[in-house]
Length: 140
Image 1 (cartoon, helix red, strand yellow):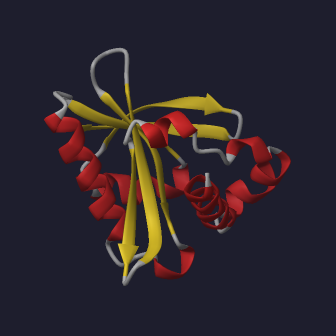
Image 2: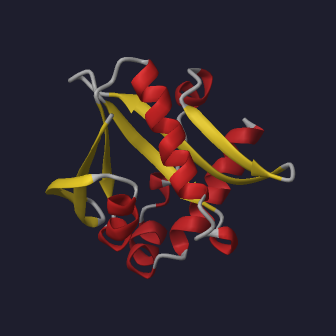
């Protein structure tokens, strides 16, 4: 439970730094939640630097047999140091080992360049409760 709360606090800190997300997140605090079953199933991966948690990612199986990148958050003060890219690659390795042919993500438009640099291709858009999301896929 303590780990869940610490990761949710990191998620909130990271999310509130995105100007386009701040108002919607403050209006929808329930969006900041890491399901205990996701933690228990070993689908949440924590990145540490000198013993301090600096980011986390999570994956979920999809009904089509592929994998969803369900979460990716990095401490705001340590962004742009390759941690996010390393977490995406780790999730891709885990998904591939589990037999997945691709990693999918619904990304914020402000993160488009990041996901494209990580090898994702945009395959569409989707309306979310926070606005338009980018549907992206990375073949494994």
